[in-house]
Image (cartoon, helix red, strand yellow):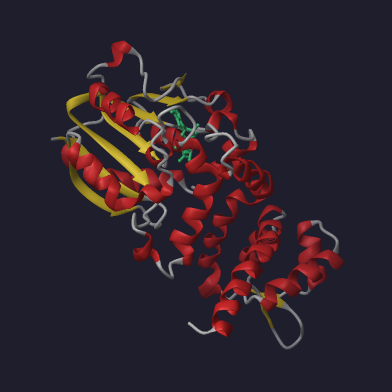
Length: 343
Ligand SMILES: C[S@@+](CC[C@H](N)C(=O)[O-])C[C@H]1O[C@@H](n2cnc3c(N)ncnc32)[C@H](O)[C@@H]1O
């Protein structure tokens, strides 16, 4: 690579991070939703009025969106997103962590320092992280459907489900709707997560889910052989003690039960990720802020984070009593699903 290309690459990456602020504004103030809904180009004033915003600010925002080709402009200075591209707006979900980037960068910097803390448990991270993390999965119902084919192949019926590291309950609540007759349990050690999930379940009148505040390495002793299906959605790489966590999964799973383990799909070896800005670049970066500190947060922690990677994870599962029956992406490279049974 020559010097100019090298420096242009850095400039492009940094410009992306500034533009993310504009994308976050567009997402959170409904500008993208309105542009998606419209079937003809609009002026900045029409867009601002439709979103109940100030026209001058919306016009400046549109300047950024046009420059970056996220929004198109016609000859009469009206703005639109071509119908065939509107579906692509779902890529904007990746901004989910943006509002906390400043705070998380500061705490991560302390963890990097030799004199700083070993890590930071999820339970001690900003409370907003629960809400923001939920936003990465826009359609949890569709994710549950995507998880199902290898499950229904292995299991006749699903009566008992355990969602480990459930966060704010996004996936749990979708499971409860998909399996209204199942007995569903969801565990997280974060008080904020359990409080939020419980409140949403109550508000939605959901009766078949029990939320439990607990560490995944110490599940209730009377759960042995209780579950048909155990799910760890975006959790395993975050754990400081994945060995004891998976021992617990083995214990609470029925002998003919199935476990789904979903994590970002990045390679374990750095040289295999060269040039992969959009998955490995983002994944390792988020990991520096959240996943690595979390998986480093106790004495003797494994310090995995997202960089543990797909190859290392698969080798770990195969060497610890699991047979990987199926491996597939759930519509995103950040959600690679391993369906496993007891070997
Ligand atoms: C990235 S979030 C995923 C949340 C949810 N599964 C989802 O995909 O929306 C990871 C979750 O694992 C929980 N977690 C991490 N370590 C844990 C542990 N040792 N015991 C219980 N929960 C844990 C965190 O509190 C957090 O809610």
